Length: 225
Image 1 (spheres, one colour):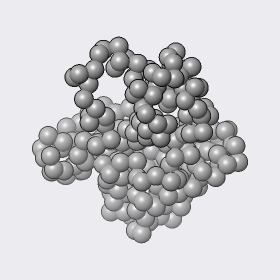
Image 2: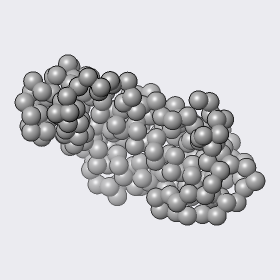
Image 3: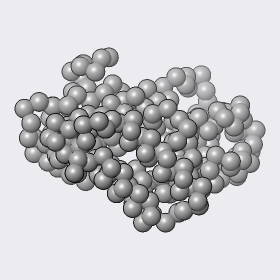
């Protein structure tokens, strides 16, 4: 499916997480293709239902454990949190790296959904500068409580191509209105977020207020004075 496929156009007003704004433009921004990070390549048709449940329990436990302890957390820690044996974890994920990648996929899906919410707000006529500020705030708040995401963000590719496209759409809308600097791109914002996340976790900073301050600094760096 292409980006211009009518199935993914957001031409109707929809309620978002925190805002409901009337349409204010003559055109709508097209939502990107469905996110490719979804776990669609796993064929569960031949797997027992209990095996699938165990797989889901392991992933959920890994998300929690890695958020608390970072990607240096161990397989025994994940198994204990999931209430299964280590062998059960290894049946779903032969290596720790495979489990880390599954958690990273989960985190990319969160960012993708959050940027789609922001895109909905933009299509509904929302102010791009406010939308970008809220997106930065929400992302930094999540990073403050998720060590694995904060550690992985600086060293990974964009959370998803679709998520990056949504972010770029918001930035372009702000540039057209003259409220965001002309030379700013979604990649610049991603690098700034990654740098802040990596630095604050190396300093073992867990105070959400400090993370919000750095979010404000990023926002002030990209908006047009």
